Amino acid sequence: MKLKPVLLQSALVFTCCAVAGLLLSNQLSQAQGQQHAANQEPEVEQQLPAALEKILENWERESAKIEKLEGNHLRREYDDVFQIEKKSEGRFYYEQPDKGRIDIAGMKIPEGAKSDKPNDKGDFYALKPGQDERWICDGKRIFSIDENEKKYEVFPIPLERRGVNIMEGPLPFLFGMPAKVAKQRYYLKLLVNTPEQIIIAAKPRRRADAANYREAKIKLDPKTYLPAAVQLIHPSGNQSTVYIFSNVVANKNRGILGGIFGKDPFTPDLDDYRLEGKVVAVAGEENVQRPVPKAAPVQQAAFKVPNMIGRDYETAQKLLKNMGFESQVHAGKPAQEAGQRIYHVYNQLPVPGEAAKQGATIHLQLYTDPSKQQN
Image (cartoon, rainbow, N blue to C red; front, top):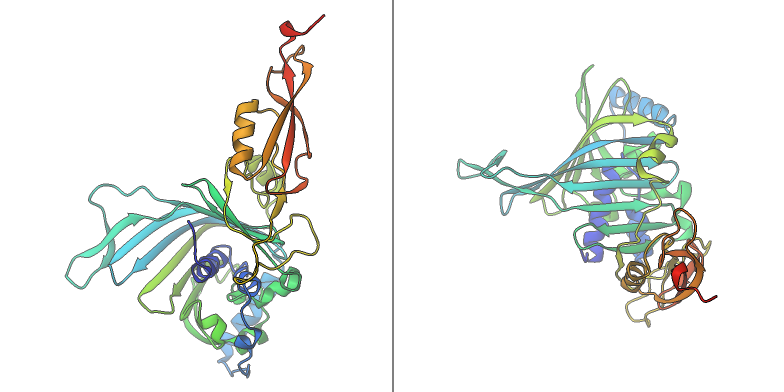
């Protein structure tokens, strides 16, 4: 999943939608050096019908109550040129002000199955599974994870784009954007307004937003103002992506999530994954730098040292090598108690979670075979 910057930006737009507007894309585009002037078109507030004004007001008020959001999603990607639909499913998670996660898995397509979208030949679009992927934002970095190839890329978020400043993302109206700002940035139109559903169409007024999508349609639940579905029309007009949300829950206790993931869902477990790309992104640092300019020499990246404790030394060394680290094993104390396994790591330096650059040596201390101990 080696994505070009523009594709990566688009993928993050879709990620934002799936987490009800996590607003991550613009962070990446800013980190990749987009010109700020691209966003400087005049933002004259438009006059809207009273019904839409009231909806925006209610939406802003209800969104302000949400600190966490999670749920399931069904993703349908349509390619009108090749007349193909790709289907995926998964879950999404959001936590204020700037954390998000979306897990996407291509759905198994039965042999001979077709899309329900008709093509221009009187038949239907071909149906294929979507790509398996994960996107995680921990507030400082965006992780793009390829599940099939077991590799990942990391993109730092500049300090000025973190926290509440994430509101400058391309789809913030999906989650808590002030009504006044929404009217300045988007041409808004109320398509449906019934007790069962609200559908709003939004066309970008900014060139930077228009580079990501031509139009968005957002379906809301009038009782909760939570998103029920989002459709994005791509800039070309020949592709579109639809997210359909279900089992959306606001402010769910994070302890339950911890039980599912074993830890914070916004902290990816990448022990078995290979780092790709040349990006400056020091984990845990306050001064996360921008990606290296194309003409500049490549700089080293630094990330959290993975936890090798409990693994056998061969597996540990292989994983560390795949992630760009060197390793050195050291004989430690004999395995004499229950749970102590010979030739397995019980201590390491640097310690798990500490920042280290690629090429650094990770020292692994192993339990030894007590039968081979010298008297």
